[in-house]
Length: 614
Ligand code: F6R
Image 1 (cartoon, rainbow, N blue to C red):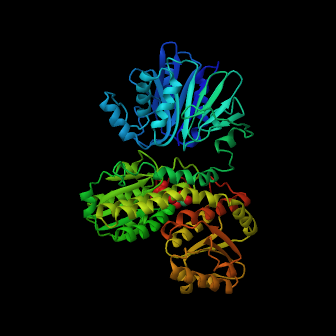
Image 2: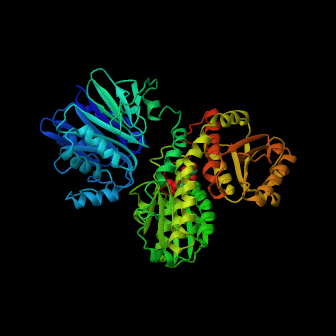
């Protein structure tokens, strides 16, 4: 997710901002930029690529001296990662400079309105809308803070905005909704940052901005109001992290931070998907409804954790759309001579967008005249560029090698794709689709509930830390969850772990169950009555052979309690959505166990984040 820095004080703003952006580099980004308020108006510079590129631009053409400014590192959502789409965005008169993190859901409507009023857009971003809106608002309200609040009231979606106005030097404005913004309080200087890493070098005194609040900082004052201008009370706190902890948001590992970011990642992936007509819309779908109606077979291809997201997707795609769906490892796909033609849709899933196995598979599919739609978290990466259509997950950059928020947001994107097909093919009524979208909208809160119970998982990891072999069982969508739980444990804790479809137990795997072997069991919601009963029998079977059973089961289901050594409660959600809550305890478990064993959780041995070889 983007990094944001705002500064007003007496130091050279460009140095403070570039230093802050460097400390925010860990968030991942694809371009950077800075804007300063100078005696001659706004001076700005921006550049695609790493900050070293922006440094180069600033060295060649130094910006005039200034003690007020904003900076940004961008993680592309709307529009490719290039110089033009990089922030800051300026209005046409170059009076206002805006940096933005998040997604402005109603930007298409606002953009049309502004274009009708004669405003020209130079970038493809939703963020530029704010610069023009603010310019227009200033015609009616001369005070920039008031005008900015009026703009915020018009925006929907998620945003952190930081703004400077050439005609109001010495003032930096910020606002937030569903996206973080922190104020750093100094002596004769104040800061804004997307997190405290932006200013930790200068001050450890911070104020976290609440939802729907606007902040105005000058060198000597911090004034916070709501979007209507009503003052709100704020609380200062002292940050006692060092710089490296600050980068991880105070967590020990990027992985842990990313696990905790999952409610936001899911919410962001769902944002902006409903059009003004109330129908589901997918931004970069690029395939017409006619082309999608022709699709009579879907093949999902992916690797590792993304493959398990594909396995979950199959259940939703077939159930909601009645289109046959196969799921295949990308590394196997092109070597088996698959039957493909233009009515086959190949759906690739890749967090990085660079995985070579997946890339080669989609190239092969396109050679065979299949259409390719990619679900990806990295805007501008190779796989989406080589695909006919894309659905971007908006999880923000994933730094830890083991995928967590990438996985959950992929599953959400797959659900959106399935619902989109159901809409286009008429396989579901609009109100049925809406009901599922409403259930999905409740998932971030449900995931948060699981995260709030992390202590129980940590204690469990402590008790199981000497076990060298751990099993995972699931049925239906719980099966890929079991596989994912085992993969996470293998890659982080280097423990022998295997996931099985619980029905397969009796066909072989039960032979490895012996005294004390921990077995995690993902219990389907009771709505899947037959399955739920069957898995209760499976729990009894392994327990009878000495296994130590850990049941992941929905609240209110006590049927497994007599046969479980530990019960991890999951919030009640519909069956098909259960992977979104059931995976989280397994991620926490693997992370904690690896930590206790003294392993490097973020960089496990022998693994790379982006696997660019076949
Ligand atoms: C496991 C993990 C890997 C990736 C796989 C595919 O935690 O991260 O299994 O899921 O290498 O990577 P992407 O999704 O980038 O194609």
